[in-house]
Length: 396
Image (cartoon, rainbow, N blue to C red; front, top):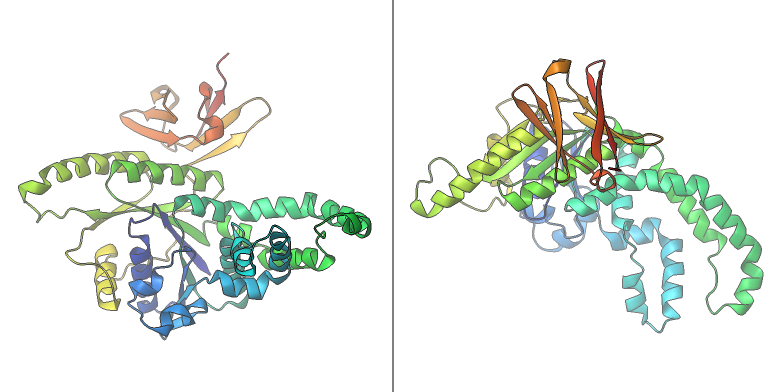
């Protein structure tokens, strides 16, 4: 099963592009599910679904046609299905503060519940072999980062903290409940948590396998949007996911010659050049600004024809090697960059803001650094088996 994760800044058009991709995959014969992980769902809107259908039936996979389904993760339903014991305990605690039942229920929706629920579905559908491709319409960039980091965080908690936490509370619960105004969580709370973890088992391996999961970053040719796309690229790389495509949406078409758009065109051309330079060798594709809003199947099909060449398979594995990676060593950090055709004498590098700039002959690569490395400086570089290894250290 393939997973295509579409992410980007809010408002860049990723839902429409994910929907168009799903339509193309269905046309090619794949059993396809498009799943919205964004709390502010717009997937059903994109297909122009109306009435009660919009509110209820998309919480489970809903057939658009024989080989295409859509699903919008509904947190209220997910709490009843998967989070019952955890939510019940949180509500009981919140009630002791004087909140009404309704207020307590709303506040008991913890950050991450929606993302974890979506991961459980992906894992479930993978185990059942229900779909050939799942297209994930992810939340805006910050929430997407939380989405991909959760499996490893939860795995660490379950292995190192969960057993101790559970055993300690089990021992002190009878005494503590007599004197505390708030009852400690019962064993059913921990059983619920363990059950959730088991449903997620293996999802981290799925996300980090480039033959199974690919990230497609959606951006607009605007400076502010580009900066967030660059940060997303860095952090997806940091968490071991492979970005195999950058989709530049809403590019002014050549047919727009009005002088009103002259400055917009100049600014877009500058940003387009930056995008090509920054993300190389990752493939980029441009999608023009449409004359009308892309809503409904016919408009999504038109978008799919613009986005993909005739016969092109969006599920094809086009990149398995990460352009660069980060590692932490005993006394320094490392940036590892694949440079298969570079010779030692033609490589130069320097730091610019929070980016490491690598020059190979006439080519220049900008590598955004994660927060933990942004204040470091390149101290030493070496070539090993066509990989450039740059050591990053604090300046003395």
